[in-house]
Length: 346
Image 1 (cartoon, rainbow, N blue to C red):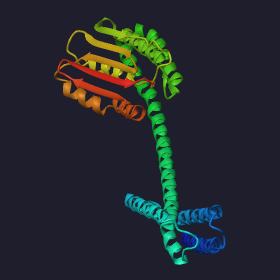
Image 2: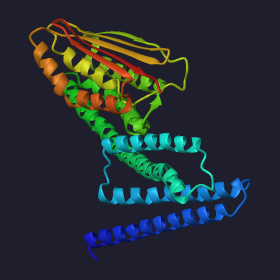
Image 3: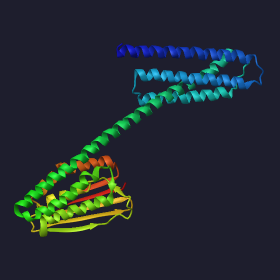
């Protein structure tokens, strides 16, 4: 059986169920009317029970109508919800008016029937609203789970790309050092092993202790000091967090630091000047790094920074991990290049 035939068969079954509920509801109303005429005026409890059964069947009928509606148009427009809300409020108004008239069992059947129409409309509309709202919430939950799964997959991909990117850049630096100062290669390789151990094994989690990330940054700074030597003028101020439970996304700050060392080479001065500050204020991590630069390579450095793999990677991770919880400001001046990042701790 084709999908079209199955859908048509399902609609037919639903329509038959609705007709059955309409008939059953009308029968309940007739029985309630006939029965309440034969009881005394003090027997309101049974009358209320029958009305309750009538309301419940009407609500169920509304749910069936909502099911057919969803089968025909899975995406319900906002206008449909607005009209449904208007019908419900109008029905409530007429139900309250009918209740104020206090219908009795002794009144003519036609009077009770017309007084029951607002209640019937309200019950059916409520059933439809319940079905549509529940379906809408279920759709939103499904979409949210899908988006979360996609974001998690993207985060894992972005994070897995950082280690090869870092290793590629670092090996290039070591190769350059080996050509002119080969005696520095062994200690550089030892430092590199410590750095890779963290990036490959310890940085797999979505968030890691800030203290571990700071130790990784210190190791990287020592690595660069060994590689560059006395030409590097490094000013560092790193405050360890008081609370050891403070966490941060792994390998997030190192991208900006590595970028600072990369572009500090553009300076025409005799020394490479880099300033680094990391502090925790309340529930915020403050990060600042500035490196020397020159006017001739300013535009080129800016283009590389915006389009470079590492910075694009970290921008995307910030958007996924810290939505509306971070501020990133990058300044490219003739004499220096700086990055100021403020983000909320985890």
